[in-house]
Each structure stands twice: as C-alpha cells, then as structure tokens.
Length: 422
Image (cartoon, rainbow, N blue to C red; front, side):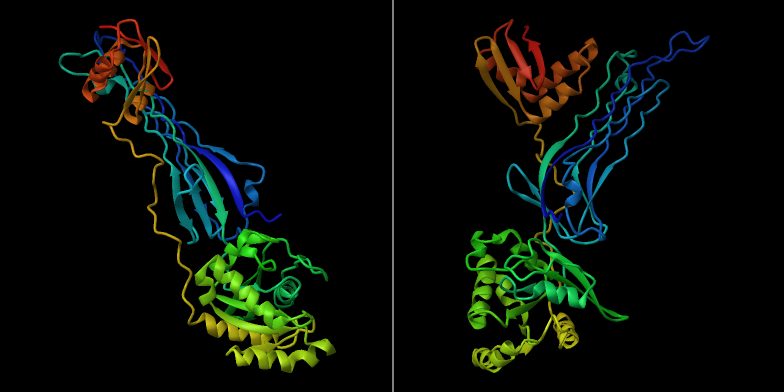
C-alpha cells in the first residue's frame, strides 16, 4: 500500500541521573565526593534513505522513543550515553509540526540527517557541588527531561518526469511499457489510485525516473475525484509528459482542463516543461482524429506527438526528448532552508507565569523552572536549597509573594507539588 502521509509521535531519551556518593577506601578517613554524572539521552533523528519511496513503514508503528541515559556511578564514573534513534524516511519527505502546521524540514538529499528531538543531558553528580564551604555535598542533579514532539510526515515523490492527464489516458500503460513497473491497468476511470514510480534505462549512462500520477479531473485542485491528494507529487518532477486520450470526447478540452488544474494547485506547475503526446494511435479511429487534434493544438502553439503505449510506438523517441528537456530544466529545490536542529520551544530562563488555580493553590509555568524542578533530587536537602536559590534568582519567589501567596499554600511546578513556607 502506498502511504504518503503519517502522524508520528517522537520522544528523545531522558538524561541519566547524577549520583551522590563519597569515596570509601581503607586508611582514607574522609574520602571526598565521587558521584559520577549521568549519561546523555538518545536523540531522535530522521535520515533520508534513497531506497525508500513510501511512508508505509509508519502504517503500524507511529510511536518512537529513544533510550534514556544511564545514571552515574561511584568513583566519578559517568553513566553510559544512549544511542541515537535513527528513523529512515524516503527522499522528498516534508516534516511538519503537527500542532502548528509549521514546516520544520524538507528532506531531499540522500543520507541527510535531521534531529527532531534532542536527548536530555545527564545530571551532574555530587562531585561538581563540592566547595570550600561544603566539602561533602549531599546533592546531585537528575537527568534533563526528554523532548517529545508530534510531527506530520508528508511525502512528495522525487522523479525526473511526471506523467499527467485525465483518467484512462494511458499513463499507467506508458509507465509499464518503458519501465519495469507493474501498475494496475484497466479500461475504466481511476484505475490508478496511487502514484507509481518506474525507472527507464535508455542506455548504460542514461536513466529516467518516471512517476505516474493518478488522473486529474475538473476541480481536482479542490479535492474533487481523487482530489489534490496526489497533485503535490507532480511538484517534485522537472518535466511533464502530458498524455491525451485518443478516444476521449474532446482531447483538446482535456488538455486545457488538466493544465488549469495544475496551475490552480501550484502556479509553478503551469511553467514546467511539457511534452504533449496523443496516445492510442494503434486504433484506427484514433488515427482518423489525429490530424484534426494536431491542427487544433498547433494553432495554440502546442507541439503534439503521436504515440501508442500499447503498441510501444515512438516511445523511445519520446524518452530521449524528455532527456533533452531535463538537461536544461532546473534541479528540484527544497521547500525551505531549515537548520539541522530546531527545538519545538526555545527556553527562556526569565520567562515564567503564575496563575491561581483555586483557593490556596498556585501554578508556576515556565520552561526553565519546570526543567529545574524535574532535575531536582527532592530527597536531598542540599538539592532542595539549590532549587530555592534558583527560584529566588529567576524572580519566581518575588512574583509569588506579589501575587499573594500565603504560608501553607500549595505551589505546583510541573508535576511537583510544593508547600509554601516563609
């Protein structure tokens, strides 16, 4: 089954917790702190795999979670960092933030890697908190929380040549005749319900990748018929072969209609190089119409060529003509330039908000303060004092007092519930 869209949940690995430990050795009365740091959590990375041409691998599995980093150990031993989770996607995959519809990346180049979720850093062990005033710190950091993200994957096939035309014009027959593709072929509209790719080998040094795009009818750019579900696949192609059905009631009108639908969906499609062909010339009634259709199109300044996909007439000349157009056609460009890593939210240490939930309870929200709470060992008094100093430094404590917090009130920070005391 061809799948060109998928909703995927991603989560990086949490950083490993720092360790609280003091050196123990015979004849060493007071060993210093030697708790090790936690390991880094695994990143979630999307990598372009050129052998893929569909998102079908996301049909059943839509949740990907990287491993957490290991916690630190004794003797200043750092916990093991987790391996990155690499997810393969086909060339031409667009990555969107599912919540905001923001385009994050356009993955075109084979092997390109895009980091969606960054793994949390490991928490620091108590060795880092020793000072002349506190030579035996009973405090450490928990690992940084994981990042989670829901993305929408959208595939636009990358092909040299796109085959377009009304339903039953012979696009699938042409693809099957010049490549090893095996699309479904039948004598009724909408035989092709999904794009098909094929590779035509003209000689040892020349190959063409062709994409058979499902038939376009009036209103396709608005979702009529098969709709615009597959029109985006034409955007990646560099040359179009526009196939006219020799048995159609009015092939010239079909030519105009298809071009209108392409231009309405994306004005750039109306500017792509086209080769117009009149198909099914193996049939006598089509041969009788050929001169009239050619004259009408020539009067519009359109050159048209007779072919038969079924009898394989003039197909090799058609492909070589496409090769000549490709030599001057522009290379497909990514939709936008994006950095290798863009976090969903850029944390601002000074950005927080306070709201009163009900009588006697408050909630503090902010990336920096919530992350600090998640990295605090609440069972260690030293870690709690350090968190209190951070609240004071960020201005959270003063803001709570100004809002009217009273002793005994409950303050929620992330998933943690604290009691306010003077």
